[in-house]
Image (cartoon, rainbow, N blue to C red; front, side, top):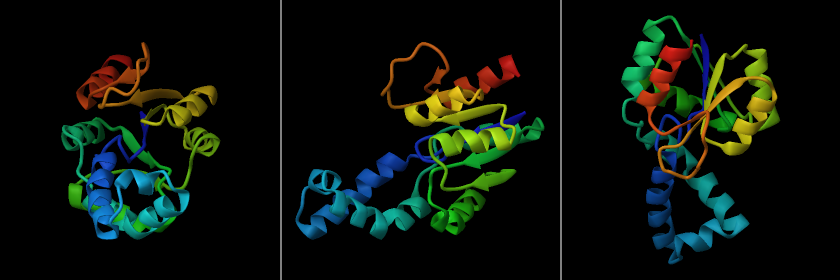
Length: 175
């Protein structure tokens, strides 16, 4: 099986890391973190100045390493298909190596329809995604997609999973 995976908030705790870093950043500027996130200029400046640190230090989600290993051992091919900018490719590859996560290929800077098209071009059998817009576009393109969320943000009845163990069980049952 060819499995596509998003990175941020799917296999690692990016939002939590952003909150941690923005608290420090806001404190240095004597601002409230919400003031930064609600101002386009300040938000862009924050991400320009801090994304590298966030991506280097982000924490992998529970169970991901073991499940990655088991999926690979069963002959699955894992493709990283992310909206993360290409400029963070070397940091991202180093993080994957540090975490011991083996992937077939990494594709950067794809979102929405471009992400769906990439899934088609790579013949992805199953995409695991945390962004509802990407999920919708991927489904519309005829690719089977799971919406993953371990923070209880969505109330969906199908194709929605909140733990990596549930995703692994789903793959075992259906493919």
